[in-house]
Image (cartoon, rainbow, N blue to C red):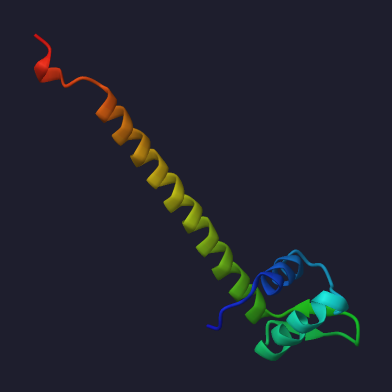
Length: 95
């Protein structure tokens, strides 16, 4: 699976929501690449829609993003727990 840049991911996310896109200015090259990858299809010169392959790719990207957020959150919780453990007195040293 080829890596997608930020603009390509934005286009896929919009297309996955059912929006049609026009390949103008900044969006022209990313739309052309997504067409070449089979993630978009052209209705005409100005309207592009997501393909089933594009939808599958977007779902995979979205799942990766969600997992990254979960991993980050878990690491934060673990770090806070370590800090609390370090800050609390050892129960065996209390006499």
